[in-house]
Length: 319
Image (cartoon, rainbow, N blue to C red):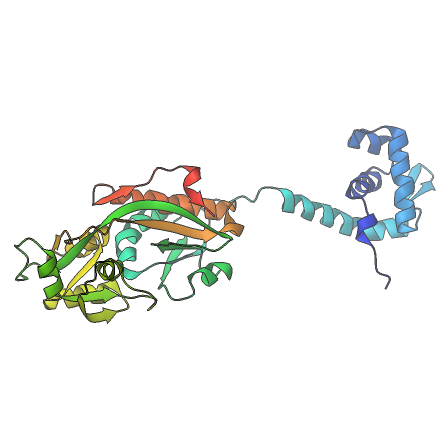
């Protein structure tokens, strides 16, 4: 089978050929295509040269299709329809969409965000299911391979091809059980350093924000427990004298169980930004655009809970 050089094939010529074969008339094809009759005649001549076949041959009542034209016409129509579908904006109707959405986030972040997100999915996309996956060391690889649709978390540097939108800003608090000996006192630096601490280390890489800040002050706290999940840390804090320092929205999600108090840490940790992160290949995908809107709207539920929702402005999306 000979190899065809597609670079010499004019798509417009194939569109004209489809009209010529459908109308079986140069005049009617010209009218259908909005071109002159000589131009349509030239298109027929070029098509005959391309296919090395007459394509339209004289019959008793005008042109009829050659055997080759009858053979190629179904494939030609399918191909043009496929190209049309490819170029047409892909529709997405959440009301009829099925399947699942896969988001990667830590457990306490999921506990804070997912109830509001599920309420929106139930209203707009009742047949879509939600799957939450735990973070690991290969966050961006999960996006690259389409293992997840998006990530929600505190994300610092992101490589090329990764887009990020700030959801809300949060401050840090120190969480301890309600009947902790320090619960009714002001948390000074000396008292903070005397306490035992829990650190949530999801990836196992790098120091916690509090430890990095203390190291810069030449001080160090005792981390008595390092665990991979917030919910595990919360249960440890609920049953021991260990404390944990974390974003206030997550702390209030845990403190909603009325077992804890949250105190300001004795140093300024600044604010952390919770972000929604996705791959650039899905920037304009209708399904992903809708999903990002759902996550942003769910994050607005954090307003008034110690976080500051970010304005919905396009320039906050960062590469």
